[in-house]
Amino acid sequence: MKPRLQKFSFVLLNVFVSLGLMVCSAFAAKAQTFTGTVSDAMCGAKHEMAGSAAQCTRECVGKGSKYALVVGDKVYTLETSDKAALATLDKQAGAKATVTGSEKDNVITVTKVTAQ
Image (cartoon, rainbow, N blue to C red; front, side, top):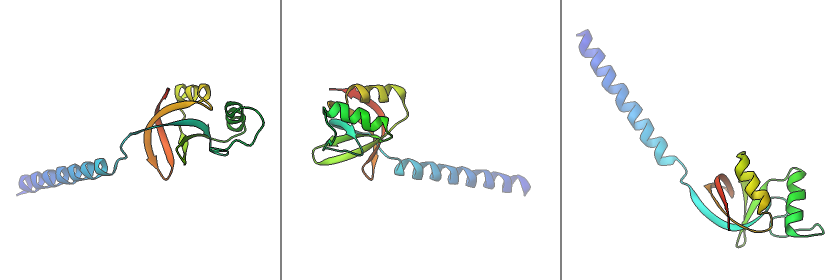
């Protein structure tokens, strides 16, 4: 009787683990691609500082603002700690870029940035 109970417990455990993995993958955010103008979260589409949009973006990010992507009339805050992505965002400040990542509540968790 004991081996039978062990086998049943093993099968039941596998079923629960499999169901858990399926539920997690169903709720995982899917990567999307967004193309827009690189800005900062504080200024968004309107830069208030003197100089170019690129200068304003770099200065605001230097003071603690996060990078943002302006797509039409929407402004997405960009979350990343990837040094290559941050370097591309800095280079593309005020210019077009394509950002790949998952979006939730107007925040994109960045996986890739490419210049346009």
